[in-house]
Image (cartoon, rainbow, N blue to C red):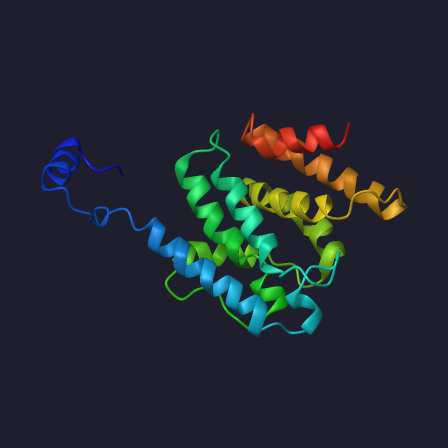
Length: 193
């Protein structure tokens, strides 16, 4: 909810730096979850190789979650609540698989549930089996995850990459049927040309 005009005018008159009104606590949650995700992927990984990205063995793993979260926040075709909830979930979407951390304690039960829905401990095989039955929001968020991972694997030309392209293309079509015109689907279509 946006502050009303009177609130903004009062602040301009007083010329003070103040926090936004209390009903807008997304920024505080974003900051805390971002820090929780970064620290979890740095200090609480279940395997030391999960602290860094596979493609170079040096880039902090947390950049993946940050990329996914930042990208959905910029996808302005999506409703605000989808972008904000999606960003908080995407910052944490690999915590349960790759770290000993739990979802940030101040997140709502709904956020915790979505993070659990995005977690496939059986890897890609389990994900491909169960993802078709997941709700559209989970498919949308999984698309950001898949595109981020796909981007750092280019180019390869192997059978596994062709299979991944097919999976991502299917996922993009599923998402576009519910959330038409998103940036992430346009990205997939341009990548798969």
